[in-house]
Length: 189
Image (cartoon, rainbow, N blue to C red; front, side, top):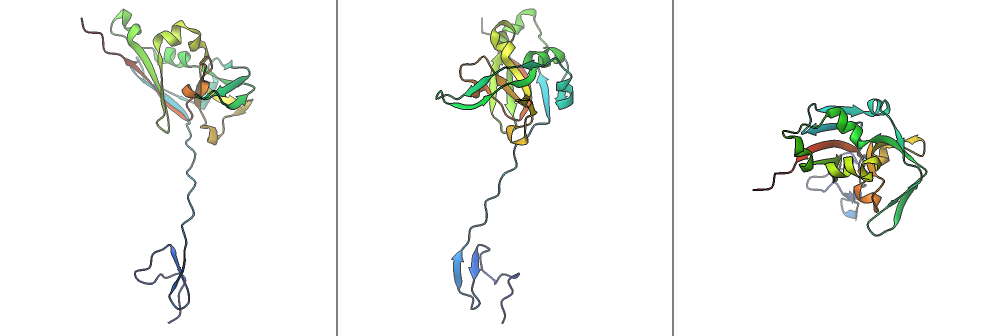
């Protein structure tokens, strides 16, 4: 019986090549699939806000922009993983101001924090005090350009970077999807 290369003999594994007499020759592993890059096309602000809001690339570009200037992205070990002439983006606080924090009591801002999450699940946190009362807030940017070019799909499309951190890479989020505002539980009396 002739061997039909399109039809596999009964009981044969799809990763075994057969010779003309039916004996196995070599084990062939399927080619590994390259996963598609995780890309963000919009950022959603939700949680303790008056109005859930979505920002796509066009709406981000209409907001007041900020350039970082030369920036080294440094990891935990102190190694520079990337350098850029500049990143362009919008302050994280600008997005929060548009969505308007919803605070039940006037002093609840002291308990407010923001979780920024990427498409891969990587999450970083900022407190209200960092964002509105320190230089960190000036440098916490939702970015969409690096060195004058849009962030590529490999870079996530839309990201977040905290330029005032000593180790910038630790609070860099690629493919930024969500900004969620939370209130920490009040301390028991």
